[in-house]
Amino acid sequence: MVLKMHAIASLVLVAFLSVGSALGSSVGIAKAKGRFSVDGATVYGNSTIFDGSAVETGMVAVEFQLTDGARLQLAPNSRSTVYSDRVMLEKGTAQLKGGGNYPIEARTLRIVQAGQDDTVQVTIGKTNQVLVAALVGDVQVTNAQGLVVANLEPERALELSPQWPAPPTQVTGLLQEKNGRFILTDEITNVTVELQGVGLDKEVGNDLTVTGAAIPSATPVAGSTQVIRVHETAGAYLLASRTVNTEMANSALPSAAPQLSIPGASAAFPTGAKVAIVGGVAVAITAFVLKITGVIGAKAITPLSP
Image (cartoon, rainbow, N blue to C red; front, side):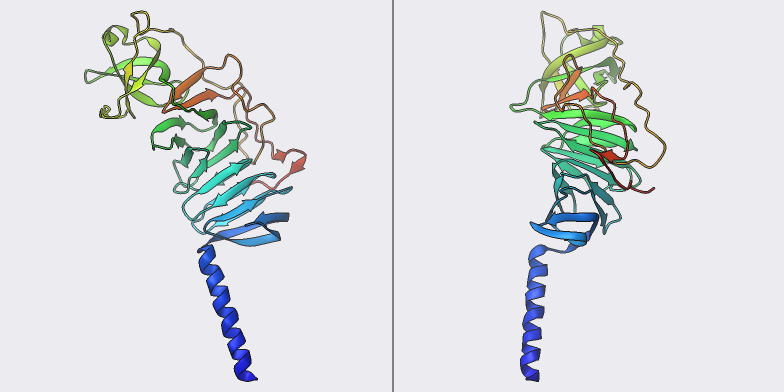
């Protein structure tokens, strides 16, 4: 009888170890004030999250304490797959704090915080848009090829839409000369590109909107992400001289700890929005002010603590 019990216990242990191996290593703990789903199974209160676990929040927000110290929060009606080296947001809204080496992937975009104490919020739009807000610290967004398509400063939000096939690059900013080469920092994406084309020397110091095609084989001047060969339009590179105020009205965020919110506005680019196109991604300043209210729908949630 004793031998039989030992045999059963051994089988149970082997089965447990096999399941754990199939799930991968633990990446943290998820907790919520209610029910949520992990890998299709309903759990209540808290659950260990393994590498590659699929989490769906349902009616409650879910907070993760990851083993590397990062804190992730998913809004209600959100879905993501949590890996040891990234989180893939598939639906809804995610907020990440302290994940300097732990990016959020949304559609074909990769969103990375500059520092360990920074906080970023990402929302999947109804169509192809991804809303990115730098709540605390700087945030960088790259495309599927690893090309920088947006640099967000603190308290700024942009709406990004990957395009296919990739349209020509379109950037607007002050044309400058650096070591005999021409650079422009886009006023929407804050991305610096090098421009090549005849007649650019005559436009140095002007605010320009230019379109062009990337030259993949070219090495950009230091501080630039890529080289753009400017398309000639009616014999001129000046498509539209303008000065654009990139400040979001009433965009100041409260000094209190940031909380998740879901914008109530449409995810589509507003009519007449100023749009930059970098690396096949259309980028616009959001038409609405992202308010960190701590309310998702009609349900209040506990904010990420400082």
